[in-house]
Image (cartoon, rainbow, N blue to C red; front, side):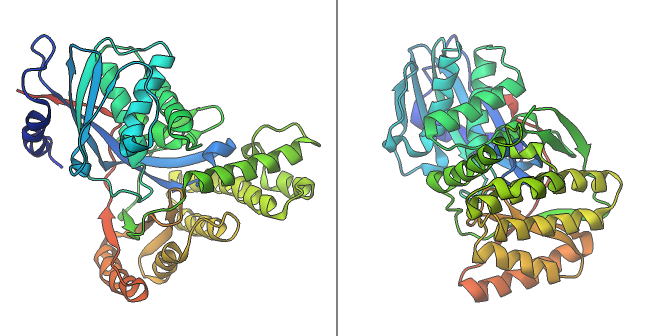
Length: 401
């Protein structure tokens, strides 16, 4: 969406909620943007010390913000316009159920304080996003990194983008209670247009890989079933992998499953006592290796191999990790049968949300017109399609006049 049209849509609502007279030293609101992300391959590997291969996308979250003199933060979302603004002091914020979506930005403010970056004054922030909620495109990380970025810039905190990603992950882990890995926050903070990021989630070593898709597009298909991987579901998967790693660590020095090759895992898998945990671990290890092979294939313009590895990723997420569900499976299986589809898989945490597909240019419209009605016949509601554009990471956009 064009910056000016976002400003035009948000500015009147900002004035309506917060007024014009509360700026600090004559400051005017500044517009900030943080992208969403789609993960091309490498799912549920980040908290297992493995590799991921995401890219930032042009769908995301916007914020108009300016400082206020008193130590109070007021936030409102145009995506939740039926709810009143949330207002709290800037120090010692505690999570409350009534904050709902507000827990994500407030958790970032609290985490900044705990790490020696208390806000020197208050803030008024109006949020609006065009990321579909619950779609597995990192709407929560987008909101977190956006909040951290605007605080960093407005108050000159001097936090670099990698550290900002770490702080925002900590906010989600400790304040919100979701034990996510680093991938989402890292991608939102460090995204680069026309590139994906190969990230080692154990070391945070990373490199940008140009997305040369040779006449193909990235198509995101939303099941329109919100992904229901709750905190308890997500945390259970993580705990199962940690238990499997602990079993292996009794006979081999090991911190993360991502340290293992496939051959090493097969030799050591018998040490994992629980068969469910063994399947979870197999996915984590094999998915990590698939990701490395997929990036190598892409960098050598071998899109066919890249697509085959995407398909294999979905099968593993379905059978070993068990986080897909009927809707995602149906979309992937339909895509696999479509001419011009290079590969397709679920993306994000799972249990609803989206698939990501690499589709030849001339096949994009047939992809949508054939899969959409077939999916609707199966489930009684239609999917949504987005042809993804890559984007840069979180940043300020323009100061309001």
